Image (cartoon, rainbow, N blue to C red; front, side):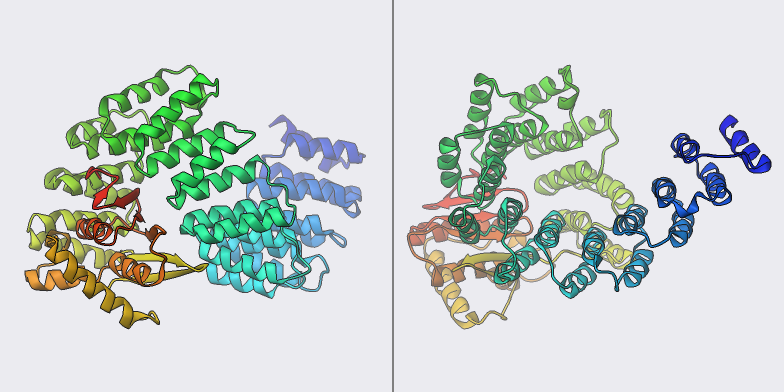
Length: 557
């Protein structure tokens, strides 16, 4: 209030001002929009508006408090604003989620030589807002893209889950002789390959980096470690980890999380003990891996003990976060203790989010807990109405119990809310290219051979004792129709493709975007026994390593 009166008095009395006095006022009023406008008036009346430095300070403050309309007014008064001022205004639009205004600003900048800097920012904003097509169009229209622009676009593609686009972008960048990639590119691309489950391409990216003399520091090696584990290649990861000259907490945590994800809980927990013996202090990610390992192995008491260590720790950085609570709910629910998991959520000191409730709903689906599942689904409709997966889970719970009228009600509600079900797909890598399959897919060039191979395999494994798990079909149809539906699931098509094209001695790697069904799990076990070939399948929750008819999950998934 005192400062506001002082500014008002200066305006009324036309007090002689210095640049230093105005700068000081801007500092003390940086979070007060009304006072900033008064200071702007002082700048104008004192004749300092020709000095962009004061207006720059004012502009930055206005963008921070979110008054973008007035910020634009100040910007338009500036005399030949330099590129960093355009960037300041642009970042303000990004921060305050005003994409339309940022596009107008971008169009105004078209004639500037320094357009690329702001265009890169605009592309990243589009990606973060989910405007993929606009981001891609703008990026491709940029002239003379430098390494910073390429790296920024690839990185934001990976961060937003668009790794296939990141790979496409990387290939285009490599075709441009004027741009040489660096260690930042390598880290992003290894992360992209990990997300896609593309082991061959990931290895090629790393090998090229070594050939071109790029600094493969510990950040690169950790990204490579993560890529191996996300592709299900635990042996490659084990060898790399042993050979690493330098290892930090990220290296150890990556291995522990990776082993847990691949179902090797024993190795994950053994590594955690080894890490502590070597004096490496675990962080919150390490404990996520430890809790996940306990969850996948059904080690309830051990999981509770590790969670207790975090909760009692004097180290604030180890205080359990929502992800750790979700792990505990998963641990209890996966072990059939769904009521205890529900009580655990109710006793949380944090507000449970959709991820935590979703973990409980998933457990209700596995253990067919209809009553509690309905209760949890009602909560999720309120907290995450746009995530269709939760409503699909509830529908599946009813379908498994034969309550088809309830299934119809859930699906009707989904239609009214405009909630869409995520389409399931599976992918297989072959000769540096990813091949995608949907259920009943007939778009692949090798469709005829794929279906012939699938029928051949189904005939052989039926004679070995395979019986379709029709409980995996959540539609009210006859058994024969259910069996037909199951036989064309995306995982089966991907496996058939791999059997046709892959080398017999190599593991067959299949990546599924959703949880695999019981029938495809049984199918993969029989195929691994029939062909004496390892099948590595990654679904939304974990890896399944099939060898000679046995899965690494030990039927606990």
